[in-house]
Length: 147
Image (cartoon, rainbow, N blue to C red; front, side, top):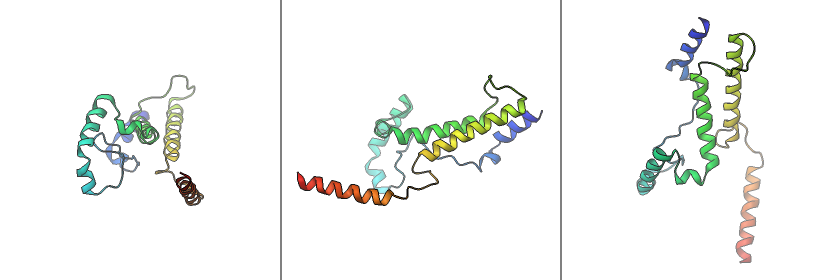
């Protein structure tokens, strides 16, 4: 009986409001900040992407940024599996409640690690990112001057 109550509690919308889930719409590009004018100017591409995502599950934009697509979609899928999970893997041994908690911890850890792998949602920032960007800019400038 406790299991049924716990699952019902996890599936309630009130409980799920607390959990963070990054938006990944079929109808929008992955670009986060765009002005209205930029959105209007690329509406044809958006229509093509909508069709491709509905038909194939991904679009040509996703192909050129597979890492971003993967790190946005997979953690959301794991989150949904965790919230809507009605069981645990059959090879778990022990009491049912313990197995459910163990599976929940595993899925939570997987979701957390996938979100940490994404630079946009990672809690820790690279201390040397600015220095790296400056050095990379100098290298590109030197390469342009050589040509």
